[in-house]
Structures are given as structure tokens and as C-alpha cells.
Length: 209
Length: 184
Image 1 (spheres, each protein chain N blue to C red):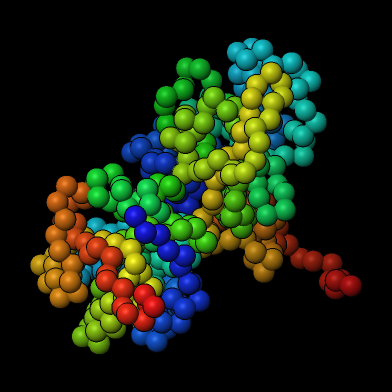
Image 2 (cartoon, each protein chain N blue to C red; image 1 turned 30 degrees about the horizontal axis):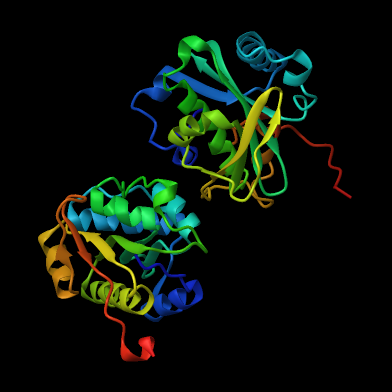
């Protein structure tokens, strides 16, 4: 996105590598085409690579969630899904196409995702991770396993819960944010949107009830 | 290794007595810029201090309006103390497991930055640092970096000594002897 994700970056175990944001970019899926990009990546990663059944991958939560897509140039190469709960954001379905694993693409995707999570005022994120992947995720995030909780299993994998503290964002979009700012496209809150441009048009003079 | 539970309300009250308050983001930004100018050293980013502060509840302290003094204190977990001593602690980007999050047991304290723009601000910074150390964290070791000659002199005056083998320019002070009243 247009601004450096300086708050979202803080959830990472290491800062973004130099040049990462020149090579990769990430933004929320805002159009049907971008949504389909996210779904296609997940089909490749989860259904093809991990043999996940279709009904379990597309579990009924996709149309109610935020999807972020990461790009190498114009090519969509990874995605993550975020769902919003009382006091925490749940991050899930993180996937990067095989050719781009080990590149900074994942870190860019996560930094931009957590920039949005922080901007919305959330201070905690939760992820259910395949238990065998805890050593890997603990090197990606500044995170910890949720204490006092049993592991659980679904879709043929053992899972654990991981929590990721989210920093306080100095520019949280609160209830008193600029009314035009909060109706801009998701994640593009700092650039005038199409409705900003319409604000100069004459109004019908009616007052709100 | 001894560990303590931090009394956050008492800490804030003591800091307030010396004119210190938890800094907002822009105040921390101003304070860190001031510290960079005074020491010639690169500091942690205000974003990073905000991250640490939001977890510890006691990291980013500023004084003056506009800000003329800053004091950064990072409570450490037991693992964090070990990391400071062996050099694996990263002050500008610490691991979650190295810091003492609010309500957890604290194994030590790391003083990241202390700087004042003028004589009065420097006096307040030194008083606050000394009192918080003695009043709130006497039972655990305290660490700081001697980035400048002035800083080293200040630490020596507070009873700190250089520590070999950990972070570069690391100075520290082991737990202070308990007073008779505390031990009773």
C-alpha cells in the first residue's frame, strides 16, 4: 500500500528486509477479481499441495472476511484471511505459492495485514497453526502459544493456538475519525477516494433526521 | 534468580513525582529525536518503543511540554536477563519472550535511553531513574548501555559496572541488598 507499514511490521520477528516493499506489495481484495485471486492461490496451496477437501477449504467464512493478496509485480502470489471478533482479529489461510516461499513476500503480506489490524484498533490477533509448524511461525512473528489450552485437530492436522500482540497504532480509525476517511476503500484510508471527489457536488439541501 | 511482580500504579506515581508520564507516540518520537541529537547514537524507533510499551505498560516515559527528557525502561523476563547477559537480546527489536509483559514475573530491568535537554531535565531523568531502580526494582538486576562517556559517568555514579560478554558497552548492577525493613 502507499505508506510504510511501520506498525504492522512490529509483529514480525525481524524488520522487513531492505527492498522487500519494492519487490512485493499487498492490499485487501476489494474487487471480485482480487477475491478470485485469493481463492485461486488457496486452491493451489491447500487443495493441490495439502490435499484439503474443497468443502473444508471454503468453509463458509470467505464472504464474511477480509482477504489480503500479496503481489510480485502484478502477479498474485499469496494470500491471508482475516476475520474480526470481539477484541481480536483471527488470521488464517496464510498461503504463498511454492516459487515464492523463502522470499520476503510472506513478511510483506503479514506487515500490511497487521497494519490494517492495528489501524482498526485491534490489540491482539489469534492464529490456529498446525502444531508441527510452531518452530517456523515463532521465527516469523513475535508471538506465543496460548497458555493453558489443549491442542485440537481438524482436517487431518493437529493444531495449536498462537497469539500475536498487536501494537497500539497512533492513527487508529476511531469512531470520531473523519467521516470521509472511514468510507474510503479498505486499507486506503489516507488517500482521497471516489466519495471524496463527490463531496464537492451540490447536495439536495436535506438535513439528516 | 529472583523475580518480582511490578506495582504499576506505584511506579507511575513515583515517575509522576519527577514530572514523568507515559509518552504518547508523538511525544516518544520527539523524545527519541532529542536523545539522538544529544548522544549522536541511533535510537530504537518510536514505533518499536510503542510496541514494547503497549506490552510492558511501563516503557516509554517523557517529561516536559514540549518534551525535554525521555527515559526508556524495559522490564525483562528471566529469559530476557539471560539474553542481555549473553548478547542475544535485541534492544531495538526484542523478542516477545525476552520482555516482561504486564502482569508477568519480572527478572530484571533494561534502561534503554535516558536523556535530558537541559540541566533541570537531566536532573529529573537521573532522579527518576535512580528512584525507580531503588524503589521498584531493587530485587532484580538492572542493565544499561554506556553509549557515551557522559552516560558511562552517570552510570558509574549510580553504582553500575561494566559487564563483559553480553551486549556491547553493557553496564549492569546486580540486585541491591535488601534494607532491614524489607527483610523484616
